[in-house]
Length: 392
Image 1 (cartoon, helix red, strand yellow):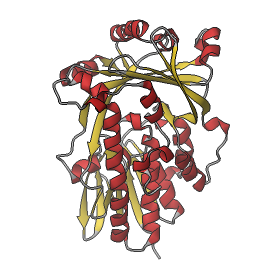
Image 2: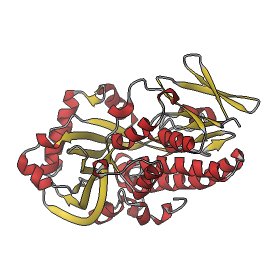
Image 3: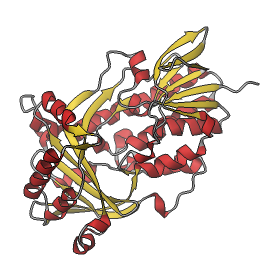
Image 4: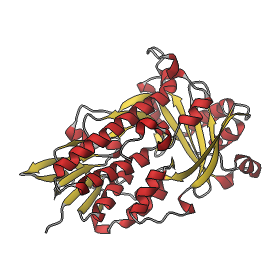
């Protein structure tokens, strides 16, 4: 019997989870990634969840201490460096590449095609045909769009769905711990830090390899300012003058311990968007990960959500030989999960967005910036989020 065939558009973590899980079920899978370079050089620090590790173990990926750094507590510091709130919070912080690399290495070299940009698909009497920018094509029984925020597959299905800018950006940086003064290294330890200037939030935490990763959410005035920021960028980082301005603000607004981490970094930024897709499957074309829904990073589960999407899709396909029935199940389960993630992300980021858009009507609860709430809710585990406790 001929194996069922799947084409995965997008060779990042969501696509790799889908490809590996489908191959384990006996599918013949081909992955197409638009970026020609190895993606292992991309990404930054991430939070993890037990559910993410469970799927990796299901694939036979060995878990050891190198997967992440264990933190025991969250600590919020004021601008003088004093502790204003502390919360016990045992968790594992990792790095994107620690998840990506073992998934990528499991795939046969001839099943992963880098530098191949998907353009569109056609239906040839029930057989899907994916077309690429080099004029080539590939045929399959199932087409999976795992191509992220600016998904081309999603655009083929729903051309009117566009990412919605949330009014703020996440300034990011990663710093080798050995470059920090020894006294600061000892003071930071292995905790997860917060700083909460009015209408802003910075989180800073250790990641594998003895690095410190930070994300600093700051509003922009309008979409034009975001365009200016993008035009100032040179490669992955912003121009020196803009970086110097960010560091000066850090010295006046952040705890000295955290300002020092920002000071020693080469900042880059990530614009924050929401994406909510009306359906995550149409015919034999299905979306997962950020191609389906993008929730703001405050939910803290972009990688875990992609893994859970892929696992749910594969379980649905394994439960029946009827692909259409399997996709209907996937749409029902993961569509609702994605919508809830988007709503939660909007709620957690509302007080930052409100500073950029004060003309909108914001209920008082949306402006709550108390450390007691944020240290508990930002990046919470799935077990602590009742509204997300579905199809795990």
